[in-house]
Amino acid sequence: MATGNFDWDAGEYDAVARVQERWGRELIARIEWSGEESVLDAGCGSGQLLPYLAEKIPHGRLTCLDRDGGMIEAARQRIRALKLAIPVDAVLGDIAALEMTPLRPASFDLVFSNAALHWVPDKLRAFAGFSRLLKPGGRVVAQYGGEKNIQRIRAALYRVLRELGAAAAQERWSFQSVEQTKEQLKTCGFRDVRVWENEAPATFPDRAAFARFCTVVFLRSYQSQLPPPQWEALQARFPDVARELLGGWRVDYVRQNLEARR
Ligand code: BEZ
Image: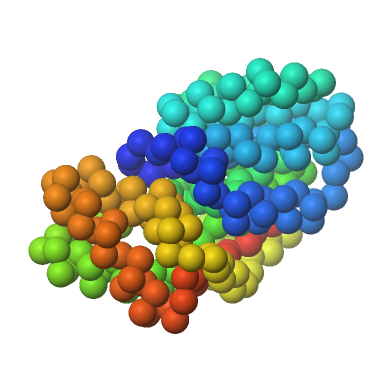
């Protein structure tokens, strides 16, 4: 769930990322399990989904991977606390450079990825990495931000960044079309490719809950690009501008879903 070129706050992410956890659990429920799979959770974040994945593979093994050191440490703590009955490892490594990780080629039955691939600009390279790690016949199942994801959230961000004189700040996420994803998966040797999108708006009960969520999930990737006064002003101003453009304490999520076989 976490990647991108900045440090995440694993504790805060765990506290607010309920919607990402729900999507992950829905994704797990959609998969047909034999119970013996060797699974890679690519972009595992703090390991929120680890117990739900482990439950599905009583005779399998689970490897969690994330490029953020704080997230991997949180996942390791969770692994220790849960005392799971199957082998579980947490590996520091980047979905965008899987060939640089110690993971063995052709060693996984399933690559699972929840709310992470939008942090990877070069998705073709990520898919090539998945293909290399999967056994023949192995599957990839993922969901992440789709082509028209968070359009109004982004419009609010651009407006506030412009107001603050920080329009040059760069967004760290990248979204692409269903067609592009299909082509890339086929280029990487996948078959039975299915890619589709669905709207998945999220709503929040009040300004405080919305502001906290947006700071952790969207704004934090701008922190290292802004001097402290602009960073403070972004957090203070963004929720109200977003509310105006979205008509409520809402996030206009659009999910891209993919399933394919090696
Ligand atoms: C997403 O889950 O769609 C997302 C999360 C953070 C930044 C951008 C997109």
